[in-house]
Every structure is written in structure tokens, then in C-alpha cells.
Length: 416
Image (cartoon, rainbow, N blue to C red; front, side, top):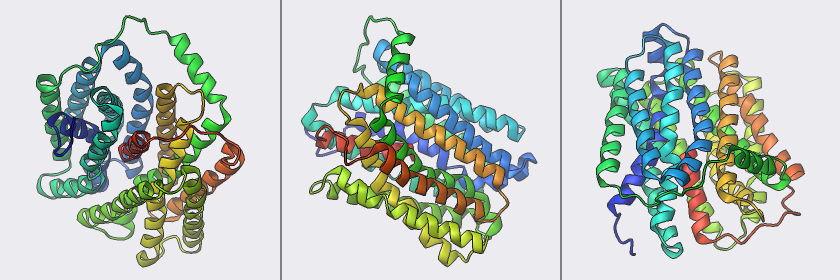
């Protein structure tokens, strides 16, 4: 199989995977408008982001076993239908509390594509072609965090915030019809009954694995800076700094571009250096930026934007060097069941994201201080966990193939 052009099925996988980031990033510029229209606080609207992360955390642990047992297509179609239906309900909600509840349901549907699309790529490609397929998939989905806020701000200015969710209905319906009519089953499933006891034992074994948990928590804490940014900046930039939704979308896109840039630089570095070498060097960037940001906001709760924005850019961009390598180190520990380990890694990441969003929402006061303090804590915690729990100088990892490297970089774009 050659990949001179994007095969239609791979484009479909990219679009399905991008539904998750689309649902997260597209409505961020509308936080204030949603709160005003529903007569709710911005804290309540921020909880809708937390509930979405809870749904992603729970759903990731479910769709993997289901797709192995019943095949890829049935759970994928179910997830896409649920995502689309929930998006329509989001467009009609009468209150902020209802939005929080329905966003949880939407995430349960949206995470199906995040999990099953990767499995379909594995099913349809040989090992030597998989790396090329994942590289193309990255190009398709990598632009979602940049374009989604810009598209959301444009839709908001033209038709109001409810149209953002109607756009998600359109996207979900298009992907559902394409998958139903054009996607062939790539894994027929098996006859084994799902054993909750076996799955539970596998998860318990992973929770006791020091190196796996250390690297997984390092990856999750590094991503914690990004989720802090997601939760705090919509209201901060619009109400604290007077941004228009369009200006906020451009700021968001700049930081997302930095993350993607560092992810690609990371791929180049891995050709000459081991992932642990890159990780041990890169892990220092984020706490230096985090401490700078924390001190800056403690001194001045609303620091000048020309000081705040560059430090945030460095912190967010550094995640592209840290989280993929920490994830790779976690999943290449000897003796792991990689599928279960990957699911637990995702659940840890989005569970932490949920906690951070709730904490930031409770501290929200339209200043940059909650942003700076939480980013400082997560970045310092990441380097402490890596040093004292993961202990990279003592751990063993299996050699990382090009296929694994591209897959893990692709997963990082998805979690964003």
C-alpha cells in the first residue's frame, strides 16, 4: 500500500478523530456569550468543559474492549450517533446546568472516534505502512485546535452561540453517514465474553507498576498546563483583557501552533536521541515557565499581556516535547498489555483535566492568578514525579519503533 495521496478512509478517520477537539475548542470563544444568554455564571459554563472531560475519561475505557468484542463499526456508529444527538440537545438547552449534563453525554459519544479510529488504522495497515498512515492522520487532525476556535468565533459573530453546536450536528451527521455507507469492517470481533474481572485485574496491575504510573502521571501533569489554559483563559481574556472572541481565537491558535511545532521538532530529535534523553532535558522547560508565570501573577494578578502571552506560549509549546515522550516511556515498559495501558493513560489524563477544570472554576475571579498558580503547581509536580517516581535512569523500555513514535504523537494531538 502506498500513501502518495490521502486515501478516503484515512481522511474519514482524521475527521472522526477531530470531532473531539472540535467539541472542546470550538465553543471556547463563546463562554461569556453562553453565560450571558443562559443567565448563568462563567463558572457554570466552565463546568460543561469539566463534564466533557469526565465523559472522555470514562468512555475511553469502554470503547476499546467493545470494539475488540463486537468489531469496530458498530460501537463507532453508536458513538457518532450519540455525539450528534447530544450536540443537537446542546443547541437547545435552556440553562447552564442542562448544558453541563448534556456535554457529558456528548463526550461519551465523541470519544468513540478517538479510540476506534486508531484501531482501524492499525487494522488496515502493515507495520511498515502504519507510520506513514499515522503521519498523514496527524496532518488532518492537527489543524483542529487552530481552526476550531477561529471557526467558533466566526459562527458566534454571525449566528450566535447555539449555531456552534448545530455546526457540530452537521459534522457528526456527515461523519456518521460516511462511516455507515463507506466504511468496511476491519475487525469482525471475537467470541470471547467480556470479563470485567480480567479487565479489572489488568488495570490494578498497571496501577501498581511504578514506572508506568510515573511516566503516565508525568504526561498527564504536563498536559495539565494546557487544560488549565483551556479552563481559565476564555473568561480571563474576554473580561479581564477585553479581547473579542476573534482575538481570543487567534491567541488560542498561536499557542496550539506552538504545541504542534514542538511535536514535530520532537519527532526530528528522536531520530538522533532516545526519548528518555529528550524527556529529561525538556521536562525543565515547563516548570521554569510555570514558576515564572506563578510569581508574575502573584505580584500582579493581571500582568501586562506582552509579559503573560510569551510565557504561556513557552509553557504550552513545551508540552509537545514532554507529553509524547512520557507517554512513549509509559507504554514501552516491558510486560505491559499495551491496549489496556493506553486506555488507562487516557483515563488518567482526562481525570486530571476534570479536576483542574473544577479547581480553576472554583478559583475564577477574572484575574490571571488562578492560571499562574495552577500552571506552576502542575509543572513542578511533573518534574518531581518524573524524578522520584518514574526514575528514568533506572527504568527499562522496549525499543521504540517509528510506528509507535508516530502513533503516540498522533494521540497527543487527539488529547488536545
